[in-house]
Length: 483
Ligand code: ZN
Ligand code: CU
Image (tube, rainbow, N blue to C red; front, side):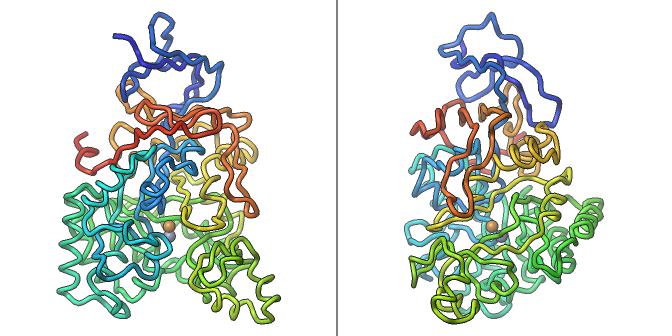
């Protein structure tokens, strides 16, 4: 039997962090068939790479791509970066399971504008994703805020009652049975802010026994970050499985320089329980437009506003000057919308990113009119700017943080590594030119240096554009764990 594809003369970055080596890679069906000197083997197609880098397809561990997989199934913003798997439903906001009769409000509205993009069960939602034929693989978390809104409706300004927690738990269990890989919470966001630690401690109980993860956008990434991290660890202990601290950062001027302390706190907790964390490579964050956040920021850019669509892409101070009001007043006028907040110090970003346990996640928001550049630039920026140019870590190590480490932390079977038998999720790139081109001014731009991207053995991105193929699969927890 011949191979379907041979990538000849590759410089292999295998995803473990091991030193690069020169080899040929054979793909048969959806798997890697062999790696080595394959001069004697025949294939339907052979591509001479002449030393280009080949790595496992990148795993974007922190996304809000639930709806994008259905609305824009070619997933250009991620495929163009070499991403082959996206983990959705982060920050407490998932598209399922959600009772649509409650209407699509607040946080959910930013992500899932349309009723068609949410579903009452995870199984139904996964079916919609599969029917859309996405280019990339996807795995889904259940959002705590989604459960809360589904069970409590608009009456969110309080702790959930015992019976409500029980209903949320039933929904969570159902979604885990359907193949969700865990639960996310966003205690920083209004629908979940009033939730007590005890509410979560009670809710997360099904996670550990199912081998599912708990991901946390913690309650406070600013002055109270120490307490907020402890809260997430406590919830994680109750879950009994792995806790992932999402987009770790030290937010706001008073907290610049605190990352040695927060990383030490995380390391200390890692000795007692399984903990992981991810980070995006920028000093600005992005989320819904929240007036209380604008005065804490060095600068604010609007990513979209329902009442003033022309504000998208503009500096809030400029808009405020035109409107002859304060930044805060202007922000209040533009709600509901989205914004980019410059709130971190570069030293903290670099320190967190270079921690050996740091995974890379984009946290991109695909529905924004003028998105944060992380949506199109995260992975190439780490490879090009931070690894090659600033030499924060080797290219081998950069790849490990996007592949092997991520697959291990999220329990994705046979992905994140280049080895015979693994799925043929593969990115081919040029280490000399790989880099982000998306900027805060022009955020929608494919990266440089990404030559081709394969998902389950099929090319999805080639010569700077999508191939139109739809080999992406929904990665259900049960199938991942049968390792
Ligand atoms: Zn978040
Ligand atoms: Cu997020």
